[in-house]
Image 1: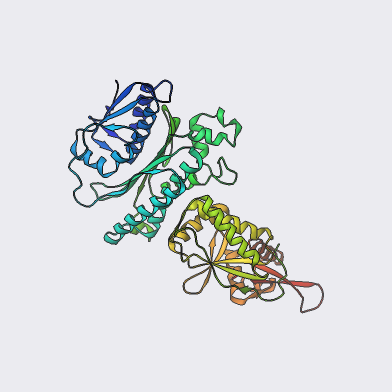
Image 2: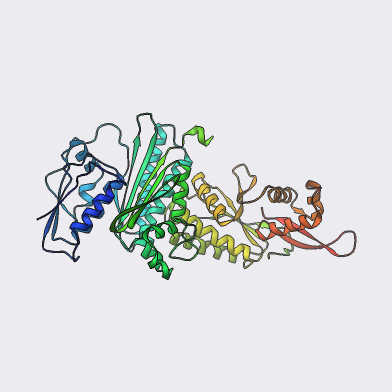
Length: 295
Length: 193
């Protein structure tokens, strides 16, 4: 049995590059379901954000295409086990991997900061379901707290909707989404949304319209995809542009990983080299603007 | 160009935007909504304004808003629909937010009816054009001479350009009327409101 031990303690947009690269290396070979089994060990992992969750879904799916079976060893951390349970990880990955043991963990205590559990996006109707779930939860938060307004709800929902719709419109694959709210020690609240697919990636998607796109580097393709009206379809291409605009307005950040590159956008663009891995993965972070800024 | 309504523009019964559910998302849904609205506009009588009501929509994402409004407003601006226009109403804040973003990016503008019954403009428009449009709303019809009252330092050709620009934007409709003081002819503009 092959082994992929995830050694990074925290799975986020920054650290997942390593996991993708290791998965690509260990899964190298013909796809279509080999004879071997592979064990993915998460024992050392202490923290996983929504991007880490959707990234793991991609890794398991990628490995499943290349192996007879994938076995996941869950984290030893009981809180993290409880979080995986709460985020639907066992259910969403059930067809991809066998989870060894249980992930009962300590379960949920206190009010949930989960905005959206891992949710598959297979068709446009799924996007609507995601929106409905998310809107309901944000509105419940609105009822009990200050700090979010109707504009924030619209912005969060728009980001989520545009990112998920891109899966249906561009990836030629299915995808998954998750969102979680966090509260920093100083009380600042922010949301992280993770959206991922294992499809054709941004460069090949743009190449369906721009023949020369196949000659672009992956990072150039990502940069172009963020430009207004740069799309595989004429007179479109505003989805990622809008996402980046909202992220800017909310003092947030955006990571877009595709091919062998990751673009990190916070105030300005940072172009980073990532290991080659199929599909497109997005991490979006948005801070609540606060009532005083909206006034 | 949208020209020469014979009578004052008539406001039609509101057209209610309705999707499969109250959450409208994606370009496909936007296209379907645009097609239905355009069919309604085409079927409506000339020299009319169709109020488009969003009261049954709780959320419309950017792509859906873009597909719906850009298609419809571009058709109106092209003149293909003659003197048939739209007016937005019953806009929930979330819908208005994404419509405003679409209008800004696409360089579009559209009148909206506020809850208080006032006419405002949603989208990208300069202060002079806005002021001229509101003058037309208040008066119903205006000529270049009327605009000179609010912009005394602006030349007549610049005012004519301003009115022509508002007409191109689908916010004014030009009617042809004889000049009262003999000779030539003067254009009278009606507000789309």
